[in-house]
Structure formats: C-alpha cells, structure tokens
Image (tube, rainbow, N blue to C red; front, side, top):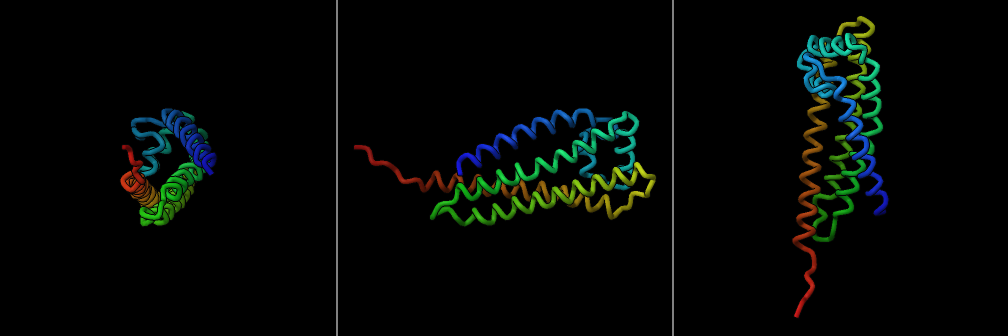
Length: 174
C-alpha cells in the first residue's frame, strides 16, 4: 500500500513538471497564464481570442496535447489526495478521511468536465462554430469547482495529519 502512495506522488510530481513546462509555450498576451487562461474564460470572445492567439503561433496542437496530458494527470493527483486522506485516518481522526477522499474524487471529476469543455472550445474555434456562453460558463465553473474542492482536500489532509500527530501515543522516558 505504501508503494501506491509513492507511485502516485512520483507520477503527480513528474506530470506537474511536464505540464508546467509545456504551459510556457501557451503564454501569449491574450493568454498571460497560458493554458490556465482558457480554464477561466470570462466570455466567449475571450475564449476565442485565447485560442486564436495559439493558432497564430501554430501552438493549437500543443494546446490540445497539453489538455490530453491533463487527462493522465487527473488520476495521479486525485488518487494521491484520496490515498493521503485514507492513509492518514486513525481511530481518533477518521472524521475527515472519507469526506476528504470523496471531495478529491469530485475535484477530479470536475477536472474531466473542464478538460472536455476546453477541447470543445478549441474545436468550436477551429471549425468556425460559434462559442456559446454556456460552454464558457461550464468550463469556468468546472475549473473553479475543481480548485475549490482541491483546497478543501488539502485542508482535510492537513487536518488529518495534525490530528494524527497530536494524538500519537507518547513513549514514556524515565
């Protein structure tokens, strides 16, 4: 079981580094945060401007590959958070374990929805189809929900770790 946690941590770290490095190619004046800019489009026009800026640099294929790689990243980071929540549970600290694990899984689900939405945005622009407000709203709301749930998961992991440390049996020294 310990090896699962190590594998998830290594996979999460490696994919984080790859995604962060690849994101640099997607930074443009229209997308100052690279791929993260498309996660929070405030309007269909903004989403279109971000995507066309990548088209102009011939980086649209890279943007799609970046999103596809995120699909691989999702089970690693959400799996790591689920593993951490369940591994840190103890008889005195189980209150946050299962809810934390469920919240981590929900964050991963919102990330899948966000990625599907971003791929749909790119397809709309590539094929000359109108980008609708509902699609940008789905992408924005999914990204916001994902990050909010990840924050709650991190809080649960920290609470479990602190609870476990506080309630650890003390060895008696004479």
